[in-house]
Length: 269
Image (cartoon, rainbow, N blue to C red):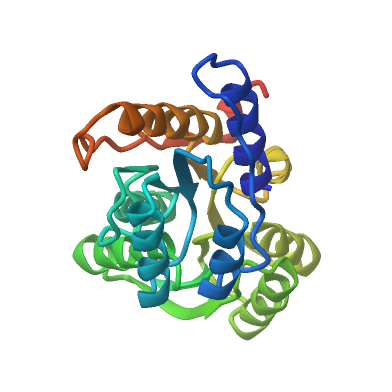
């Protein structure tokens, strides 16, 4: 849902800028380098700039180098590939986002001791890996009373997150919290709703979408750490235009500031 929102915002914003002659979204068939390669082969030879959401993998980095060597400017979105010759990364600091999730989890639980579950989208995405690393770091530093007893990789599949969450709730009836690192939050919410634990675990997830709005309103999710799809979309177009106009290989680094969305401050769509 977040990716659909992001793509829609990019198309909408680009259509309103006279400097953008055309904007085309390429939907990848998967997260593998092969899927990225197939999309790159369909790029127009007239393209001046490319924005990419991709896993950090040797083949991916080589594909991105080929894009730049072909004369196009490149920005990475949402999850960075820092060793690729991109002009800019547009997104949040994912390690900070994970640390923020752990701080919120620890504060919500107020000194209680017990186990947490983590649902990881795909560690192939550097952003997901950084969120997990940040989350674990703050738990070790500030909340040694909380232990991650299960951390499953679900490749952003809601059905898989539902199955794994149901298993975690069954195995540990006193589970204190669940952190959903990437997509898959709808599966977690469905499992919490159906399992009806005696005490609902604290549930923290990412990205404000139609689904996560519902999770907040229904008291299934406690907080959503949002990376602001509209702002990322606008900044990606602006940064691409800036890189095309500039002779500098890299633009100044500036992260998008994440928003903390609770039930009481859900913004108007």
